[in-house]
Image (cartoon, rainbow, N blue to C red):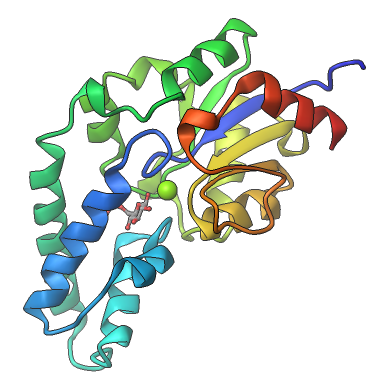
Length: 222
Ligand code: BG6
Ligand code: MG
């Protein structure tokens, strides 16, 4: 069978390239505790792919404290969470790139296909630097310029635009349900990492199973 053209592959960062999704969770949990709000890993699934301020709103709602704080206080809380998160980032090294990711990036590069990053994290640059992966990405959608969190497709459309790629001929890789919705909303082929994800075009349980040849075979039949 003839191979269908792939114009770009766009990766999510937190939870796909490295396990910073867990650091985000620990940092939010610490802040939530200070507010007497209990969050667990199941609740945390709803925070994945969601911007810092939107995540804070969801946590305040969870504790029924959504009307207790003004904007300045909320910004202070978000900054506190970010300070906790940045403490965790200090521990990040190139060894923390998730299994299968270096091989996948190398295989895509070998075919000359542009690689993009679609992360709503304002810490994305710091994370890529710590992992020594800055060179791997041809274009990173600038989180500071994105107006809407995933599940809105804006960030994936921005990444494809920056790479000069047609979204309908491009692949997005995500570990969050909001991210899968964003990929599908942009018209891309959605690869999911995580058993519980729905609406994916191709799904694996963990990054170690992300095999480029298999992914292309499913994309070709799509
Ligand atoms: C996303 C994470 O990548 O970035 C979210 O999945 C996080 O959990 C969001 O809230 C924003 O990150 P940051 O680093 O700007 O607070
Ligand atoms: Mg993620």
